[in-house]
Length: 66
Image (cartoon, rainbow, N blue to C red; front, top):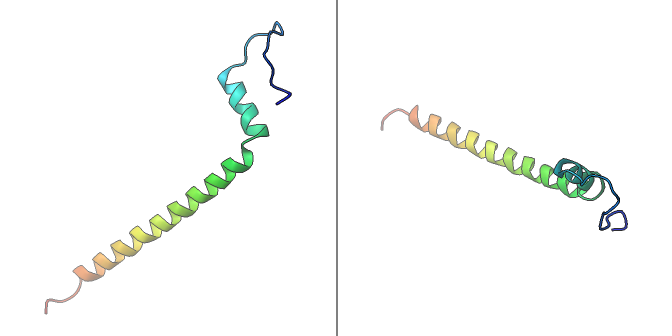
């Protein structure tokens, strides 16, 4: 927290882009990467579920009438 202070240094205020860039550079990188990995794992499981379900439906529709 020592790099954040109340300002009044005479320079212009930091933009939102610079603030978020600083945040991701120093504080949130590991959390962000962990969340991305978790999201990709959930997306892969969801895709596999949809593919399996579609395969089952296609197999069911090609069965001969009993």
